[in-house]
Image (cartoon, helix red, strand yellow):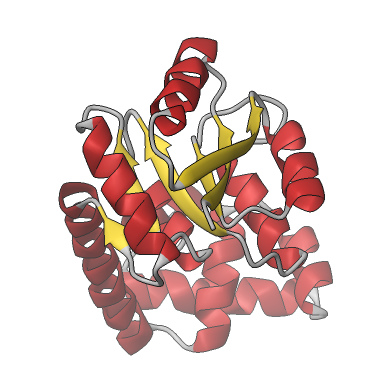
Length: 212
């Protein structure tokens, strides 16, 4: 039985090249090729392929959003990301959402074929450079969060995140089901503990620590 594929990329030249590549390999069959996220989800529901070859940067629903929908609908199709470049946050999110392979477009076509065969066999293929950078960032974030947890209570961390999301005291009060006065009290304690003096400073601190 050939490995059934759906491929998704918003560049027609790339799509055509992939279709031609897989046509030369007897153990692959392309069931659908898609140029946006909505088409991709429709093809996944109809075709139920073994593997989705997915570019993250697509119109009408990006690749990460497609992955979120796949998880929500509990699709069993395995996913390999094929992309020109990945930042650390995208790698982490993709892996969290169950991506089994990551291949950069600059790599040789044979490596993509090798990746798909491994993923179909139940293994993983994660491009070492991108993944290592992502994991380094994840470890840094965890370290930063541990430092914050030593200074602030879980409730104060929650409130800090909301401040960094540009919510007013009244909006925070409504979200946490507390009074605006209680929000002010919490904020005062946070300012004292972190030795900061403004909401802008709190927001910058939260971003530096990976809280938002």
